[in-house]
Length: 259
Image 1 (cartoon, rainbow, N blue to C red):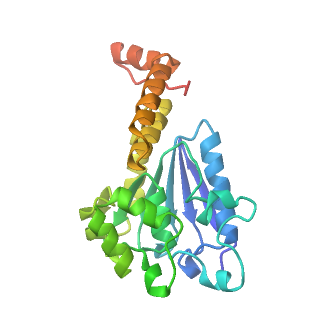
Image 2: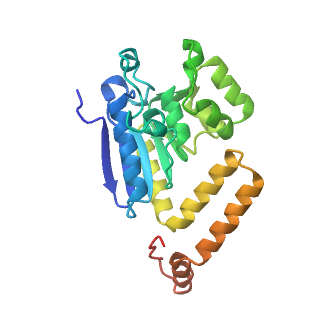
Image 3: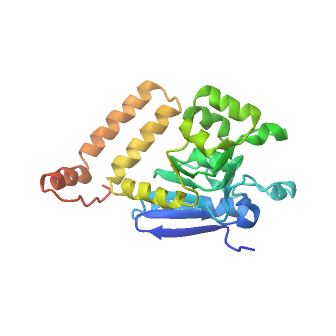
């Protein structure tokens, strides 16, 4: 049996967060939720970290909530931070990009964790799905809100109302997945994407992410345009903007300071 429900590894500016309960397909209990929430706080606050990659140990990404824990009355969120939502992530505000690297199943809450991320890399044998309707439950950790923001309307309806598994190929067709790779290579490709993102100016990346998320969530257009103008002004006056233009003129790689 494993003793640490979450593994945290720093690879330069990238934090690799591994759900580490392979004996239960990385199902979420309160301990895992607390550790994942704390790791996301570390990612958000550490200026040396710019991107997070979330993956699962063993043959699954995440099978959702630990039903045995639920049956015993244990929550599947951090009891000290209920506001962070399921697994400490689904309602946790984080400024930095998160990439899900999915090999194996990501069912129920596992799919809701994926939907909370910004990019998704999947192995060819990955499986997604929101089976809650077949169990008399509701995908209440953001699945029914985020899914129609990220896939076509009727695809979201089919997934939620039938509860049937979604293959990696179908997920790619629905644009739920950014990259489809051979089984076992999801983490490697996710790290490639993470390094590409980390090479860019962190303030620009964070502002771009926030605006895209606000637009996808249906925020009022006037509000988005106001934030767009505010971010544009702030970034233009930043040291990183000056460094970016100077580096371009000097034909060298920029050295970002995040300010």
